[in-house]
Length: 365
Image 1 (spheres, one colour):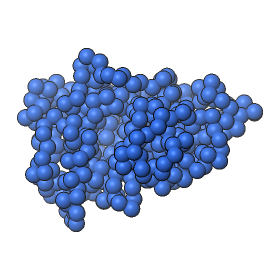
Image 2: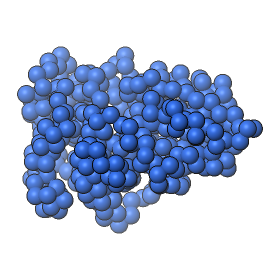
Image 3: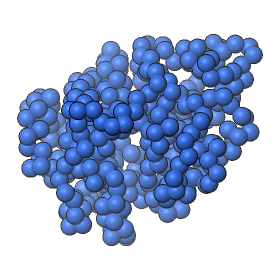
Image 4: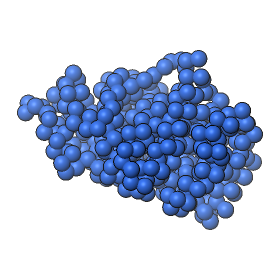
């Protein structure tokens, strides 16, 4: 019933305003810290968080400039952390910020360049405590041992993972979603929904992970349209649903949506959540036969027809596919990367080269 090993964050704190407890949560690790953050961490929020640290604390802030994290950016942050010599690292931001901070903290004392570990070199156990506070509900990075990184020179987007990358503390503060731009909210939410679906139907799912996936799926379906429409009361449900989906995927893996979204997103510079959202309809049709025993529950959660819910959501959220009509000059390489992906191998239906070709045609056309 249980996945083995079962890896969970050391401590998870939920509630409005819990980010202000960062000083309290980091105290056991030491008084020197680095906060890696994005645009959302600013103004009164930043002042309140930093103001809670004692005067003797030494806290540095490192801002990620945006976009999905690259190997070069992880190397730059590793160098900065070595200069600062922190006792802990906290990531406050969306999935890109969390993956950047997680990778840099996790590989801080590793001897090789980041590229070596992305290419398969064994990762030594991390010793730097990492804390995570998501400002978007999407990737579930705060609940996983995974960091997804892009090798910009090779147009390769691929994850690195190690059990020691799991955050020591997670702060789920729903108020951080209130100012999230609607396009980001929609794309990130569709990423979380895709993760809930793929981990639910994954061939590696267990009763434990499937229960997490189903709960995440229901919470996200209920809360994403409501928050998009301006109902901030739905933010906690969406944030917790994304967290549960992250826990599920960390143990059950995902599927061919993510197998496709990584190479397509890297080549066409598409945000990850949007890439997943636009690959999902074709994969739902592809997987339908293999997931027939689960579809009644999935469709019930979706109000009758989940595939139709997805189509309607793409329209209602104004998510325009960045792939439609695109010309791919290296289709064979994309097919190969998709087939090599661990996500694709977890897909409930076997995926061959011809299947990827057909899925690409459906997504591009």
